[in-house]
Length: 133
Length: 398
Image (cartoon, rainbow over all chains, first blue to last red; front, side, top):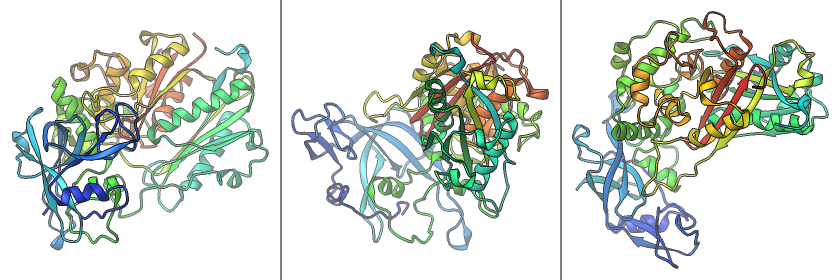
């Protein structure tokens, strides 16, 4: 398991409910249906504060990635596993940042198709990750 | 240009404490010493200071209390400012406007930081929380930041690495291009007595240094330093009776992109320098071709490369070819980061390029002095390419 612990608060509770049900929730404004990142407080396109939570398709394309080497500090001071952090552009438009699981960084390419998956850590919320589609 | 030429802003003092692995002192102590040094450098006294702008690094502790620490009375301007690496430039801008307006006569602008402690690595200061390291968590993080950190998205190294990779993917920029910047700046640092890293560096050394976050090698990343730097901004008229050659603040601008992180986002490809550069040059009444020296914010080699493009020293996307073709370094055609920058000299956020610019405009650079040095461009970059401040400094009005 390479994801860490995160707990919910008032602004993230709905998002984590979605993640626990296997859905990546984004925001859409009620007036026009514009898609925005989950974090926004108003519509990125029109500024409306009337926002709904709606499931994204889960499809994305790879924008960028970085390889974070495992850091020493675990039991017996062994280095932890490297992780690959990526920026993905959801098919709806918004960007999301997370690690990609099960991918060889040497095989990644800009524009590559990704999909959202989910991982949970004992004692924390289920969090979205990327996988190669 | 203001109507009253006597009130044109000038940097008249520069104070720099010992910088680097200097332990056992607080940031507030460094800040107070930096202001005292800047006042002495200018040839005036603390009693002449009637404005104070402060800014923190990562350790905090530099704020309004500095007035009390320095026993400053009847200040006409006092504020704590924060825009990360853009703050130093922003402080000089606010001080310049206060002087122009007649609101204050002599404004001290100071930054200090003391994140280093014996036994604590520089990486620990800036890397942020990490997922999956097996370290005991004192409390479970929450919020969107907590969510991102849980999946490994945290810390300046990782976020800038994602920006740099995007530039590499889009324009074909390579790690060797980044290395050319590290090598060029180390060559400048070799002749800077203030620099922490002066040993010669080769591209092979750069390539062999360990990955911090790929595509960044260790030698793509700035140092971490303790210390403080202050400048004194005053009027052209007041500066005439002071000790140092005047450093005129000719033009300035800021840019805060406010990224949407949605389709067509230019994160990693374009920075605020693209907007603040032309605006500052326009205010100064000079063209880019008239810039003799560029002091560019270099938290990473990559930020130098992308800033060179955005200011227009080369075309967008051609930064890699520009730097690997030998444009930088003491023998290059563009005198850039002449003190070695934050990569090799010292890491005082926006005060690093600003302090070296003041030294260069004055002609006090010794073995590393650029000539000519009539117009010097200073670039500050803060956050993850979120905040930009540009200054155009010079020996006099164009």
